Structure formats: structure tokens, C-alpha cells
Image (cartoon, rainbow, N blue to C red; front, side, top):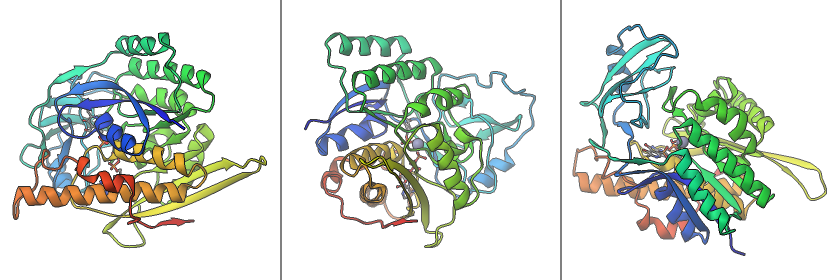
Length: 385
Ligand code: ADP
Ligand code: PLP
Ligand code: ZN
């Protein structure tokens, strides 16, 4: 039977984030994908730390300033800013990243202290980006057209990065309508807010996620920091992580996957830990749950669009394994592994010996990974806990 997904995410002309990261792999797996582009940019806007000096350098650059909480903190607040990869050193910013001062520098606040970041020598991102942002009204108009033609019946809705409060509120309205049209619609939500202690969307999005989006979602894919934000609970141990996921279940979603954590892997420091929890109701009404742990081989580079690909693949594989999170995640992380391996091999080849690949060279090798997406050889074992 035909399975139709409405995907509301970013579009980039060059590269793979948002809808560019989700549409092709879902289509390859047989899904019909209707995409609404929340932004249309020339390329991704992420600033990616390329080495572990990050934290050290940032700590040297900390300066105290007089920014009070709630004060507008940016001269350029409509510039999206996503410090993907994030600090890996001893220093972790705790407060909202409110904007950038120019394309390779900026500031954020650490407990009210202004922190200046001038990173051009140490981080890479595309030097430029250009483009347009879809407004809440424009989103409504597009949905209106779909509705007027009575083609607003979807099996899935998938959402990712959104940096505007009224846009997110409009997404809520659309989901509510779509769930009325099809009560068995599944909402897959990547609550993109930040990473490694840094929020890179406005703070006023958090209550919308907490009060409206998460309660509507069926499958939620936060990273550790996003799960902590949503629940107000810190994760220091695996036990904490499962308690946080339990709180998230109580807020709505039956399936929660922490796509990446800082927790140590039993397989050593070359692995990153992702965790999942699923609650299902069997046909006889009895409840079951499954908790899983994934030890993912780390690749020493920062990739962009991987969170978006992860959410799309989890949608696809939970469609085939709705009550077996282990099976769905095994396929999802195996796809991730194959795509990332192909990407880093290619990027290193084109960068040349001893050179760090550029962001353009590190764009995901999506088209080239078609066969792995269609039929992923299991490369990452998932443990049921
Ligand atoms: P988010 O953007 O939501 O924080 P990430 O992009 O960090 O999510 O991670 C999503 C998935 O991408 C991870 O679960 C992992 O499978 C894969 N991934 C991302 N970066 C790496 C990396 N450097 N090495 C190995 N896997 C990675
Ligand atoms: N959308 C845009 C426009 C971006 O620039 C980014 C990352 O910078 C993303 C989405 C999300 O990327 P990821 O999947 O790596 O979180
Ligand atoms: Zn993410």
C-alpha cells in the first residue's frame, strides 16, 4: 500500500540537510514524499569544529559582558547558526546561542556572561550562505492548497529544524488537522534545538516543543542535550538517560531515540552511544517495552545532515518494524554507518593526504549510497537491555 510522508524541513541547493537529506532515501525505500521547504538556502549554515582544540580556544576567548537574560543578544538574529559537532573540549557553553556577528564569529552567553567566539582559524563552515525563509503565513498558504484539493491525507509527518516560533505553531496546527484526517498518522519529530550544551534556536521555541510538539509526536529523536532541555533533567549515566526517556514517554511519544550521547561506550572511546526506548500496546491490550543501546563507531569528522537522515531512516524502518525498535535501529544506524564511511573516504580522497576535508567535500554521499539505503548490511549491532 502507498505510504505518504509530509516532510517539513530545510532545502539546500548544494548538499544534504533537511529535506535534501530525507527525501531521496525515503523515495528509494518506496515512500511518496511531499516536501515543504521551511527555508531555501544555497548550502547548510553549520559551523563545524574540526579539532579538539575547540574548548581550549573558546575558553581563552571568554570575555565578561553585560548581557542580561532575555536581552536581544544578536546583531544578526535572522542568520541561522548551527555549531554542529559542538565543543569537544573542557568548556561547554550552557546558554542560548543567539546569533552570529559575522559568518565565522559570534557570541553566546554562558550563565549570563557574554562569550565571544572568533573561530575562523579553527573551524570550518561554508564561507557564505544565501537564501530565503518560509514564513508561517506562507506555510499556511501551501497547506491550504493541499487541503483545498483534498489531498491532505498523510501516513507520516516528519519535521526537523525550525527556528521561528510562529512557524512552529503553524506546524502544530497542521499536525492537529492531519491527525484528524487520519487518526493513525504517525508523527516523527526531530526536536532540533541544539547540541553539546548550546541552544541554536531561540529560547521561546522550547515551551512550544514541550507543551505542543512533543505531546503530538509518536517518534522522537532528540540528541542528549535536546532531551535534557525538554525534561529539565541532566543525563550523566545510562540510568539517567532511561529516566529522561521515561519522562519523554509520559509527555507523549511511544518511541524515543537519543541519537547521540556523551555517555562512555562499553566498547571504548572510539564508539558513541545512542539509546532507545519503545512502549507498545499489543493487540490484546497488554503493554510491552523495549530498551536498546547502540555503540556506533565514531568517525573523526563533523557531518551535517546526519540528524535529518537518521530521523528519516528511523521513520522508514519503524514502518517495517513498528514494534521492534532493535530491528528498526539496527537498520537505521547501519545506513548511517555506510553513508558516513563512504562520505569520509571520498572527502579524504579529494582533500588529499594530510589535509582536512572542507564542508563541501564532507557533504553526505547520498546518491552514491543508494544500494546501502535500500538494503543496509547490518554493520552496527544493537543490544536489547
Ligand atoms: P544531531 O544532529 O541530531 O545531534 P547527529 O548528526 O550528531 O545528530 O547524529 C545522528 C547520527 O549520525 C548518529 O546517531 C550517528 O549514527 C551518525 N553520526 C553523526 N556523526 C557521526 C560521526 N562523527 N561518527 C559516526 N557516526 C556519526
Ligand atoms: N537545516 C539547515 C539549513 C542546516 O544548516 C542544518 C545544519 O546546519 C540542518 C538543517 C541540520 O543538520 P543536522 O542533521 O546535522 O542536525
Ligand atoms: Zn538533530
